[in-house]
Image 1: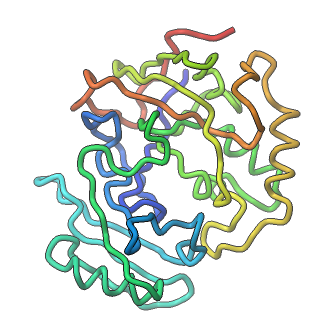
Image 2: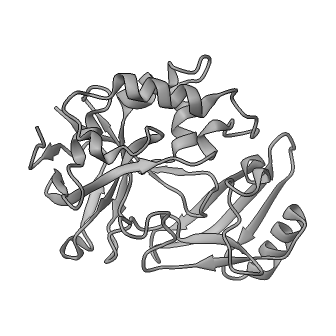
Image 3: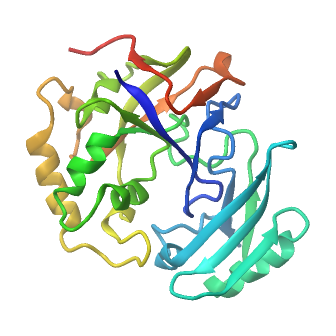
Length: 268
């Protein structure tokens, strides 16, 4: 049986994720708390690991008030140090921004979007999907990487268990088509294979680059692409996991670890 094995949300875009047992769907189709905040520079551009490797060295944890459904506090630590810095996100926002500005050595603001968060793909802004078997298989291409390390690098939201590697490639079809699937009774529409950026090439904790990562990835991905996959969706093979949309009618519904997953329309 295919099932939802893990849910990860990333309260501050580009920083560490939080494993949760359930997640509420917002009206936009995003998961509550996922990329709700983003660090932005004076020009409004995201401060992320694509542009600034210092992001990799920030360790974060969060407190969520279940009564108010708000992220209340963030704890920050620089990798390799023992000092922690805790801020209440609302009451100490200016102090948090000052600490981050000092860390990055330029002024930043903490932006917030409670409606849709700050997704990378605004055309398919639902949770990203990958299987546990895919993480383990792709990690084996890059010894000594582990499935856990690849999970941190790829930063998908929904992880599917009980399925073979690259099962999630069934969740997209031809251009403009969507593939609907159910997580228990919640409909999600698979849209396209996710284009990867420079981030997966780097160690998730230290930012060190794995030699020839992208070249090795592209070669192995091409060689292992299932025969039933619509290859027209691969203008290049540096793609892994699936972007989705969730219909507005599903707003307020809850995804929970252990929920059965079932594809409604299978592209053969």
